[in-house]
Length: 371
Image 1 (cartoon, rainbow, N blue to C red):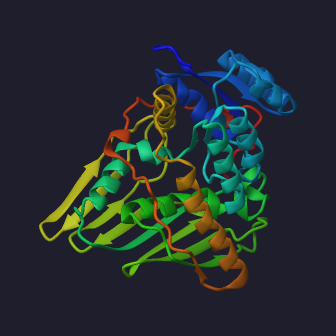
Image 2 (cartoon, helix red, strand yellow; image 1 turned 180 degrees about the vertical axis):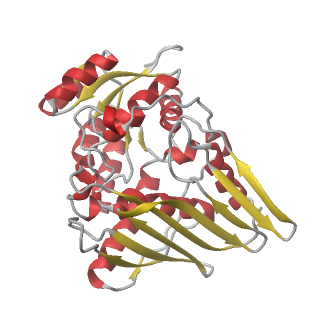
């Protein structure tokens, strides 16, 4: 299908903030991927973004025709979470490879629909866990699994920001709110640090009286794992920014900050404290969106199964769904025991140079996320 020097041709589905600020600039840092199409319902974005990147714009009504064409090999789906399935499933059924933003979908059932479509054609499906290719996070995952920090006991995290209600994240219910949007980061981190899947979930949510969100804007989640391990994280759309996690083992305590974000000046860092003292491990900023695209395109070109596949996405979504259920009922939700068949491998860490990203006020026809 691909010649030795051929690049994977991508269409971006939805021209919102994450596409404009991160994916579209980042793909230019790769040597095996190129941007060839934009799918958008916004004529202003169709005109200006397509002109800026010298690519062809397609309307949502033309999506089926794009999938039937030979103009693309893969799609990057960055619509609001509740619309992922309607673009992922047809692409997979058309034999196009799919890189879909996290969370994978807004229900376990839709994740399973995606997996069924992937198995039907054999097209590759990857969930965009960019931190699976960021050197600092990959090192922490690897060292945790190698036992460097001793038997792991507990994890706590805060990941918060101040989001504008006018942005699409601010008024589309739970599945566009802070738990799926931001909670996926500490959830995915602890699953990969512990190398386990949670067995029980409890959540408490609050709503800030002065804000107009149609969901709990601040949520605290507690997870229980086998082996008497616990994890807690708090996420919010109505506070100052916070971004950190602490991992406690029997040999060491790890404190990571920054640990989840991206950008040309964001270098992941963690401190490791043991009986001998404290050491800081700092990492240079990398092009996180370019990294994940480089990796996925390599999987496509060399027919390898991507690590952050549909199974990884589904295992997060089932926990996110349990958080929603706990918020509605006030009860602790028990999960069926599960095992992940894949793990993040050290050679997934890539070091592409960060691309210059536009500021929020430079974005084309986007209501900025920041309040």
